[in-house]
Length: 200
Length: 130
Image 1 (cartoon, one colour):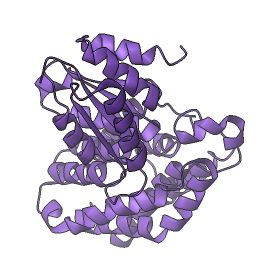
Image 2 (image 1 turned 45 degrees about the vertical axis):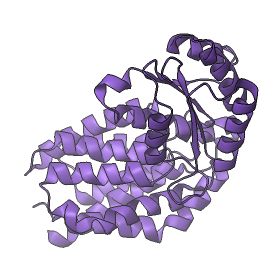
Image 3 (image 1 turned 30 degrees about the horizontal axis):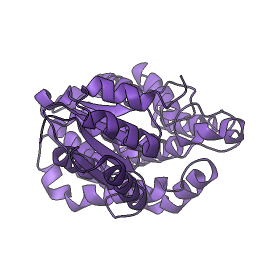
Image 4 (image 1 turned 180 degrees about the horizontal axis):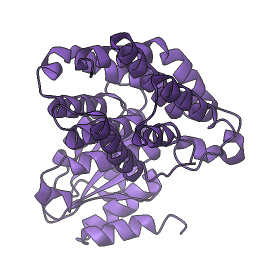
């Protein structure tokens, strides 16, 4: 049921790369205009090691993805996404079933909250990851449902006022723009759905 | 020279980091272990965990190391770097919530006088409004 890790990583890397300019444009509205470039650099580093990474068992492989992002992204999103992947690696068994994934995602999100000292509703990646995680946890989510939740959740960051991250410097002026981290999380979730869908 | 707390200066800009370190050296001298880093792994604006780990090592003192940072990502990346240190070093590295230039000069001045890591941090953080 679980597609191979290489396909998943390549799909996530490809969507980040294809949307790098869009992510950077979103970040230039409310941040420091580097989110797309940074994420692309991080996933390029992951792809450069893809053979080594996917030769490992799933938990170690996810930790290696996280470590590459931490080392190569060069912005706050490095430790944040790095923590997400490293925590997933820490929580998941080598051959996870859906309930394992829902549980691991919940723990990984808690780790990201701690790393970023952020909470839901702060206009961050958490505002996409949180609702999607809740949907996974109820165990009945369809792929279409997950995709729709990710998209709607990213859009829901538009009217939010930023509380954490660079955008919080703008206060009220951060309202009206989609959070770049929320968008990159949405893109990754959609890419994973695409891969799973082709396999079903 | 490990009887004084070390100082790491970390900016998104390599030029700001270097310039701040120049000011510290001129105003405080070279007796305080000091290192600086800035820029993302490609050399553009940003910060890099790898460079931070190297800078902590360069400024290492058994009395500890205080890191002065500029903006958000520098703090997050510093905290990540600290977690990746050997466990016995982790407790002896702090990130100061202080303006980078003034904070670095004040922290280095305090460190030069032999202050503890906690006192160095407190002195730098007195520059930040509560």
